[in-house]
Length: 148
Image (cartoon, rainbow, N blue to C red; front, side, top):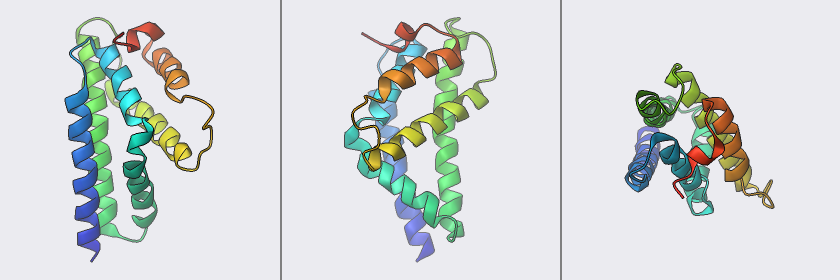
């Protein structure tokens, strides 16, 4: 049963990552990251956020699930790190180590997504303050995170 739960979780979150990647605009790296923030924090994704939160909790007692959660988190971090590296290669994001930046960004996305599940901060659009924080983290202008 543990493997079935782990496999089901992985199928759901892998499909979400594929979907988010396909939705990224053909734009400079910072704007692609901004689009990722908008998409991942959209309320229509809360059902998958709930799957994540429950998997983190259940993974404490289900080793196969914990392994799949870590693998899925690594995949998300890799996509974010690749976008950051893309911006560095293009000279629009100052050079740094993209891995810890991606880990930090993913933690912010996960935290805000979890907060949204219980309606905390429901009167605040989480993307705007997150965009400002990410701009500071990446040392870019806030406007660079928008494809508009």
